Image (cartoon, rainbow, N blue to C red):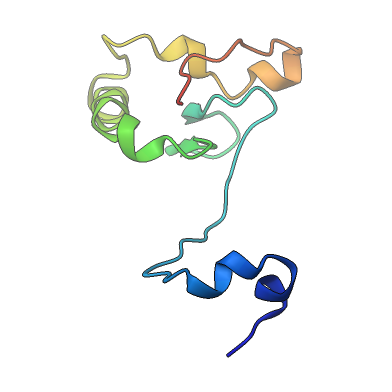
Length: 99
């Protein structure tokens, strides 16, 4: 079967694609996640906007959130990820760079 792409780039006709990957890329204005208890909703916590590196950060984020929920503080530096930083105009530099 000839596809439009193979008409543009003939070498692609010989390419065997085993898998493709697609998904939603959620990100924040400074590409750092928002992690913290939300003030407006009682007992509601957020951990979102990981820009594709959430799987890698999951163990540390789980520890942060479990400490916040059970001890109301975290020994890990959670202040960096304060979701209210956007309202204050405090965008961060990238805390993590991949690739």
